[in-house]
Image (tube, rainbow, N blue to C red; front, side):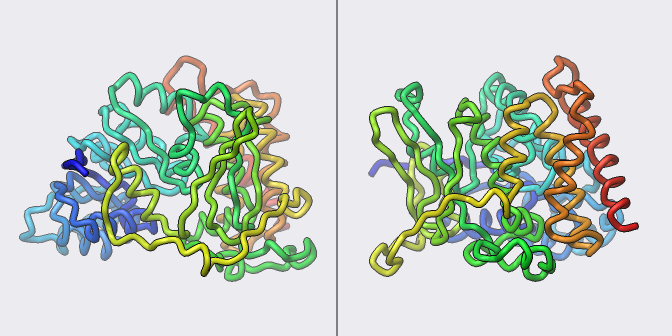
Length: 397
């Protein structure tokens, strides 16, 4: 094997979250010779400071401006510059990095991800919302700037690895696999009584709180269907979901001749991160290996849309196009936060999203209007959050 051509200057947006931590752990275990340009975090100043002292980036940014003083104190004498605020996060994303991990959770990740794309970096994309809210614009921006967007979600990474661009016209279906989450075998009546603690207890993946709730509702898979449609230029009717509790097969590509190709691996986020970091090379590191004999039987189920209506909601939003996916995302973020605060029940999450979409159906909003993409997205996001907040408040009366 010849010498690898790997990025030398990297930035990690959302470095203190589960994907960010996994990214730095991978770089450490792979003994990657990198220069870290920037690390950013939302509120976890203690972990950010620890990471900055270990990796010595040029800049460490905390989004919560009230924590800047503490960050500066923790980094005193280290030579690492510090900054705070959403604007500083976006500026850090545009810093001189060849490879940027976009792992900020939620709509807050859109502006930094777009900034990295405009700077011509290779964007390793773990932030679902950037594609859901402004997918076509993000992909165009990266292409015109001479960069690229490489998916990090295990499902999209799987498709990215097995979908031959030369044969894309012969793809019949993209099939995303889903673990089914913690409530795969629960009845709808049981799900109505589910607590936040039960909803975040994912049986296979170690993820952040918000993403774990999305997995429990299967909204994560709905978001991923929209991502897949944008990333791989696939119409909504040719993107499907299959429940696979073992989480060994991460996605499948079905071709017109009946052949189906799949990517397999243990449920470990460092594997798709390694793919995004080294592509088109492969990064040697002490990766956990797949033992199919030990894994045993692999099973599959059709998703139950009555118990997991988020899948149907997402597919309808994708088919509607325009601002619908962004509205869906904003409403979901509001509803998940309300559930975590015990203001609404688990089943109310999807119901809140559906009602929000119904209320804005006639607004004729379109994030691809030809204006400022980020401003369009912010306006849609703010409107959807306001409406979803009203719906949540009404449920609590």
